Image 1 (cartoon, rainbow, N blue to C red):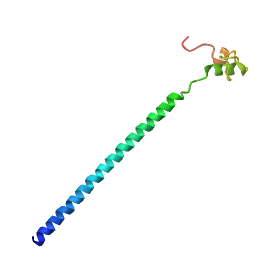
Image 2: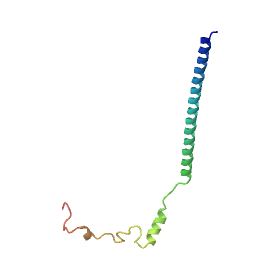
Image 3: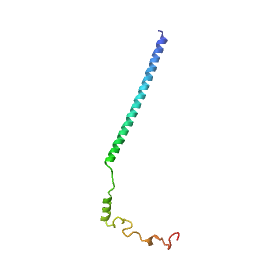
Image 4: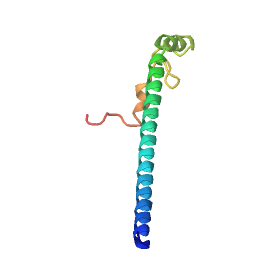
Length: 101
């Protein structure tokens, strides 16, 4: 076997090693992406299960009781208007008629 034949075999061997190394690298990256996707899916499923187990619901009875005890006239009273509401004459802005009438 001549020198050129040995060199060609060595070049082919080096090329194959580079190819197989590149292929192994691609497979490893693919496996990492798949593992990351599975971990994200498991995390989301755990979050959803936790949220389902610990649902937050409004405390309507507590809000109504708080409004009645605060002295603002129950559910209809607000800090701005009070239990009697707004005086209609305060809404006229100096005009004697409503728009369109």
